[in-house]
Length: 379
Image (cartoon, rainbow, N blue to C red; front, top):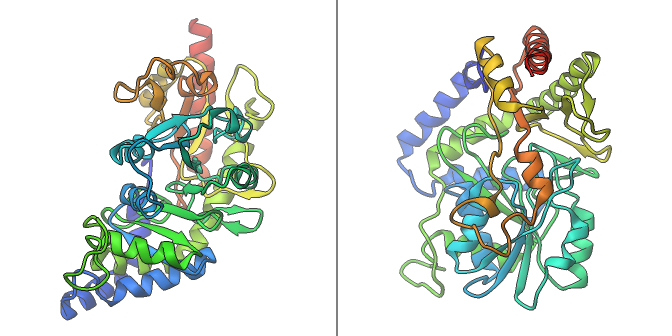
């Protein structure tokens, strides 16, 4: 059993991928070739914004977004500790300070009610993370941001394709960022990412920043990076965009079916809470792309061992909140996010991709509940 099945997806698009790669090999424009602009136009239309700026990775997307907003040394950016390190890492690399605000215990995304309490005179932006395939509570976050005249940068690395009140992830804020890492909902065959915005000035700045800060050849009005998306990756992503709407529908359906199967076997939704297996809660206004299907379980390590013995692959996203990571461990922040700390001890991701069969889902659901029961009886 595979945790993520890219082979089945490739079999579906193999001819088109090869044709598009051959086209790039034949025209030889391996950096900023025509496929890059074609992809950007298609992605912008899909998200519903004016501008897409493709980039070399999702990590660079976060960096470029903040550079375009001129965030730097001495500034503060409010974000969540329950995410991959890239979110806080890019803030710190600019010389700014990540300020970690605890999460909602049901959705695992940043708690909007805690934002204002974390603000200071140095706060320059809010960076929520749309986690596990579901958007954060972007309207509530935007309302707080408006009151304090702050931009919002959505880290949508795990939610590309998701819907929030009928709008696409990455089109919900001043700048939306995503990743095309192979395991993401829309994944390349290498690193890649993008920023999305309706602001022409920000789009212009981000295009310059990704190309060493130049607005024309050998003319550099700003500092930048080498953050361009490879033409080959753009070509591959064009192939995947042809099937992406189908995969979004499949992810949403399969994620809901996982929850039904587990709840039939005694699990409850994280909205209800409890001490057993908790399935993810998706807000009625949202459509999740289930970048991960993540449950909470007691005695996680023992449950993982039982599942391994049953041939079920698992993963943990994320075992250590960022404010408890050595690089960010600050006395005033350590231990200040109890919800994140508790969730980090219990989350467990199950095999999830658009090509899961019903039989595999039943096998996983049975194995999980049996593992939890066996561990509980052993205690």
